[in-house]
Length: 340
Length: 298
Image (cartoon, rainbow over all chains, first blue to last red; front, side, top):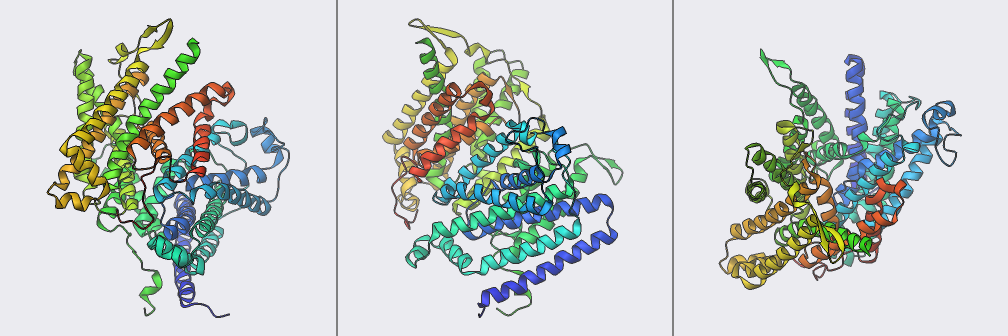
């Protein structure tokens, strides 16, 4: 089997990104404090989310606002499966359908969670892929609201805004780095595959691609479901590290944060997704420090709640006004070392 | 009988609110292809202006209402000049994301500069009393809302059909370049579109505030999400579609409120969106989508 030129370049690019991801991980695990380790871990989880988002947004070029909901579905499904029975008897005494009467090992729980999320994504996707770009965005937003109200309403299963605790903490920084490397490879290969190329072509010129025999709706659906499953993986990584989850992190603020990351880096490329995640995470930590009202150069700054939200909004508005395709535009990382 | 009439009034009032907001979204979209996510923040600007006007001890509620509507119009036109001008001729996704960013900035500015907590406004409570309509008691506020919306729709229709500027606006939604070539200033058309959009949001704001009695940074989120869904159902960019979608959504919502058992109260919106989703499955482009062939240049 001969590989196409795009896929070969994709392997090089993904390998370069993996090296960077591993180096960042190694530096933090040698020099970082406990608190910094947690921050870096959550950055890697956000990276998984942004990569999952890129699969659909970057290739089909339709804005998706429901990604945090899929992350939440994955996280809760895995959490319900994996949490030991004695803890569930305490935390979910009224759970229906015997949900509190069984528990599985982390691996099979994760697989079940991915299958469940993929099925939900398939059902939602069947409708979303047929809508025009803007219709799809609005419906994805409505889906986010539906899932969030479900998390809040069924407190007997999800515990709403209270903590769902007792999830075994089986993940550490090394496992999430390994996971993100695998995801970087699969997302990049998808982008360069026959499907990815055809999907990007249909986003550039819908009529042209259709006339060349591109089955746009089917390809969009494939990308959507694949994206949903990757988002479930991100949710599982989140739950397996923290040990407790609640409905709040899977809502608007997170949607907005990860969207800003992808847009800033450039949604059309995998390199852009990685770059955006790390730059925004770093920048946001500084803004958060300002938000708490620190003493800086002898000046006692006031507490400024909402500053990080403003900063993210400004990033999005300026990126759109000055460079709508993000920092990376159409460039992937291997363009630095390989000839065109 | 009384119960039925009351529920019909409920549906009309809900629908009127969604129709007003959806019209404001549709008029901007039809002309510049912008999905204005910051529409909800225009409503919040109106709400906060009421707080300020009431705090300045304006006892006359008409001044409070006038101030709120004026503020909404000014805010809407300002947003067009400051934020949306650079992305005026960009593709819809760029515009959509810009508007999304603007919406977040404004929401967090309210959070930072005013307060994350709701602020009460009592000056509009006088709008609510109960009217005896042929033996049936209905809420005056709902009656006002339905009537105001009908009047606004008629005025808007007259403006679009009977005036030169209205003609230019309708033409701009079909072929903007042609309109510019015939000597109409682009800036003017955009400014008018945002002015109308802000005016509609301001009127909706008055009724929302009269019903809720308080304002917080997320005031506009829920109604505008519904208005967006109404636009999608009606066919994005179609003005009659926006009105139809708004009233349809209002009717479905009231039907769900009536039919769902009390225990499912928190899930009303989920059911409403679910039903709308089925409708879109049948008609992906919406009920009254403007006719266009795939590949047409806009």
